[in-house]
Image (cartoon, rainbow, N blue to C red):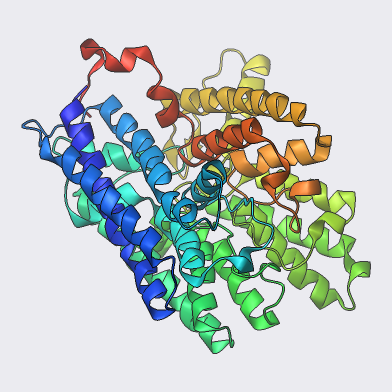
Length: 485
């Protein structure tokens, strides 16, 4: 492994986090909050640690395949460990484990919380809490790549692949750092548009910014105890639309910007995503019609909740835990499916579901027509066997981790619905589940061991399992396993 290069990039990430903390520092100064000291101490610690790591500047800047996985996994762990310090040092979250849970939930855009009263936090802490969603949504390594190239020989692209959600990530343009700039440009533009629309709808400036951070990162941290329920219908409708938009593969937006509409709208994943979301909204609307005064109101809340849970954002306008079991079952199903690959959303991903269905269809066809050769295509292109193997491997490991996590947290003496949906919510980076961890509940009902399991699940879900597993694989440290991309 190129350990000096790994340490160098980790140092850059810590310095980057120190720079990003200047924004909540500005909020603390504007609001004259005493928690300013906690941010400044954290920035100082980050600068010292970052400078120590980048001091060992490597002569060889090549990033090998497994180096990239290690950088991404360790980078997210380091960012979370240091990012929790402001909450802990300010004593606004007295337990470091709880502070870490909240921070990991923020960076992984999960939105699960241990807080029962978010409004008790200072404005600057609320800002940092929501800002972690925006940072984690597109990925902090993608942000660093947008600023400067980190290596040669394709290492930059491997970092993007390891950090970006979905089966595969490619270059939009020949240079990886330019690809990162395009992605962040689209991301920033969409965030600003949402902020403007929420301001037009009468939402306060602070709320508009923080809620947009959560929507863009498909996170779900709100600044009010009622989540989004206290805002007007227009603002809720804007958030509904933008949650759905941020759940779409960003490559499609790039194709639209390039006026390649045919390429953008031929995406099988896009139409499957729209189809699943639309079917879920219609089914739930019909089922909850009697819970609201009008059909339009029922549709409004159904659309919001489906958009929220399928994109793994986690905002809520009502307590859907009180809806009929049919509705809750649909919500759990779309929670697991998740958003599109290459989006800021979490979950299993629509593209993986389509690939597994195509693979199942091919297998069934081979039983009835053993001599035929059926080529599987996706968006008009042949799907390599390696892609299927990776998808199947991901599914197997996904199920195993889910089962082990559920087994461990079930020893915490909560009900099965709470335990099952808490694992679904954290592993798929959704936020709220059902029962005690529903829209009006939180995860503080669990003990320390369960919280550690949830922290690992959130990281595994956001990094899509493999980067985090690879750092614990002995073969990653063996020189003969090095491979350039």
